[in-house]
Length: 268
Image (tube, rainbow, N blue to C red; front, side, top):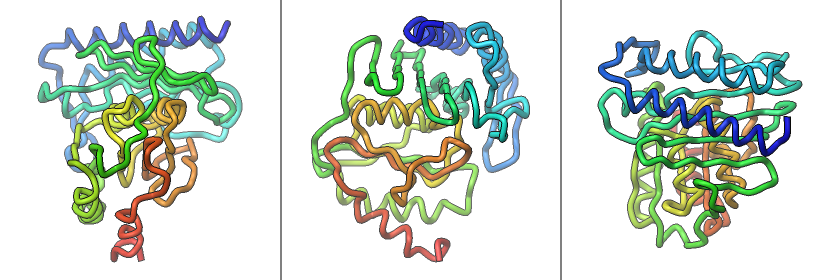
């Protein structure tokens, strides 16, 4: 399939999935392992819809998604196409109607990021990227901010399912807040990276997120000129869970706040 047609078709699927979120009413809630780790029947419905729709676009593609036990990157996935899906990134937001929540679809090709789509249906914001072709919001090219951190907002995630990372997370946030205008938390990693990509914020970090949280948004951010690594500055593996640090064009080096992380007791 033509590359542009494929990208547009994935966006169409994401937009239709977003309509499922918008029209969901009092979905059944189930709890998974980990602190406050929820899944709803809407998560499962959206993932099933996307697998069905995307399978028709690339019949030979594998799927890795947060729900239904399809959440492990296998050796077979190193070759060919793999769709990495988060049907609702921000499930707790969705449950409590505290927006945003987003639909995230990453496409890996030979274990490298190839396409990324993140859709916020509540504000009709479609972020998209194809490797090497730039990042877009509703069809318009976007670039991250070139402002310094001192003149910018920062966002972070609390890795809420990993309570052992709580103290380290807030130690970094406490140090970081003195270096930026202010700090925010949205509850969705994919959205946070997109906020850095479009210039609303200059920095996002989280000490543990899953592949489906970053597979699409990390590519979008990179194509918008951001640096996206783990918190030590190493490249993301695109094979599984990782810490994440997304820096806009205005930040040339990892801030000193993250050097603090390596001296914390849990990291020794």
